Image (cartoon, rainbow, N blue to C red; front, side, top):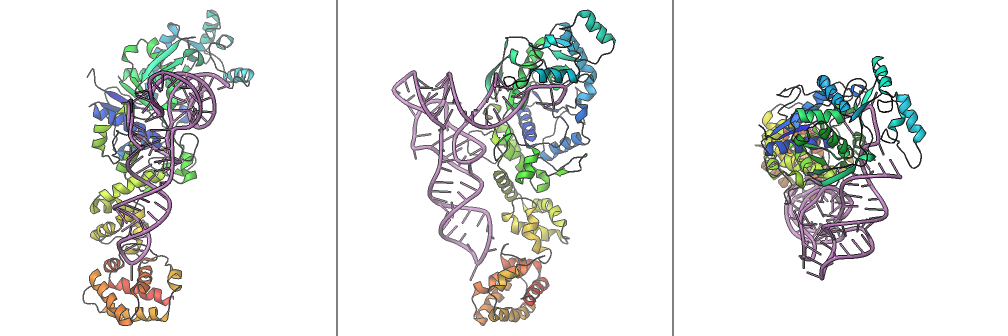
Length: 507
RNA sequence: GGCGCGUUGGUCAAUCGGUUAAGACGCCUCCCUUUCACGGAGGAAUGACGGGUUCGACUCCCGUACGUGCUACCA
């Protein structure tokens, strides 16, 4: 137990779960499984203003869909419960107080207005963001600048306050990141971060340290955006006297917008036409739904695979990995330092690969909902056969309808124009005389249909190519799909004849 | 502005001082296919820039540029 690997994913339940979040989960999960350790889901819901109903359940559902289920979580429980920081509120104050007692933190009574005032007063071209730090703290309303009596008086009057860390001056904080190697910061440049908010809730900075310690986290993986504040966390580990139990850090590279600047955000999805969230997310406030990979027709295995290799590779040429292979091959030190632009085309390629790998029974099961939205499926085996015939040309599960609708219902629209262009009496005659032959064909197989077609071509002295495309368009609606005689065999005699005569009538 | 982190084709990327600088996606050409795909064979396309160190740098060091992140009582 003492040396057990324990990692955690600590999302803030404020909305949909982003690609990058899922990748962070994945890397945590792989690392835990690889070391026979535990993967913990801890919900960081310390900001009550940003509470979003359903967001936590959504995250849990996403992890389930991806097959990345935690060993300990708010819903599952575990030896370090509760796993929701809002339910651990009572834990944090004592540590903040401990820091104040040791002189590493202090009470600050400044109101929002006073804070804003200081910032706007000090803001200039050389200082875009004035900080609450060594240079300003003695001019503010806090227990460092005020006398002991004044402080006590304010406290007794129940004046709202926060507790801030007192960042030391001119110290260098160093640590070794598992991905980036040695990283150092000058403590002077970071501000006196709020540790405990006026509502009694901890900020991320305090909560992450306290909970990582209490939950015996051994390795902490998080996004690169946390790097600048790592010095605060390191100092906290030290000041709280827990330095020896501090986890090893790894700051993951960001996933960037495919077209240029900045990290990928949910807005980019709508803008560029691809999903950013794992599953559909419906914002309970606006009612707006943001598309997810799942609903768009991605397989969870493909989604996990493509995320795994976005920023990591094992040095080989392998690109397709099962979860077991990922667990075996993954290595945090081979994760890239630089951010990666997300490439939706490549993402689709992965999904196509996984669709091809699946057997037809499984695929039929997965494609079923996408088809049932539009048409009734009478015979399960029929679906299985159809899926087998069209899976080559399906990249997303949703493609099964686009590529196979004509197996279930007559084409909603037929590309008449493409036939009309070269339509003539000879072709008209061909179909007119072929229909009765079809009606009297002794057996209805793609081979017999094709043989009959060839015979008729001979008889009418017409070029086969002249009538193949019209036939396809009549049955399918457009210039696509598997072999036309296979389609005819599948949809049956009656339907085939019906579609041919219906289309001919329109010409 | 300050500070951190990063930088190999359009994109994902291998290389861990000596290679004709892999591979994949996408793109282009051809083959297969009387459709569309799949598949097969080819092709175009890469070390930001400038200094060092070294017999030798994509690889190590330093600058510059560029990108990106942070700079909240948000995570």
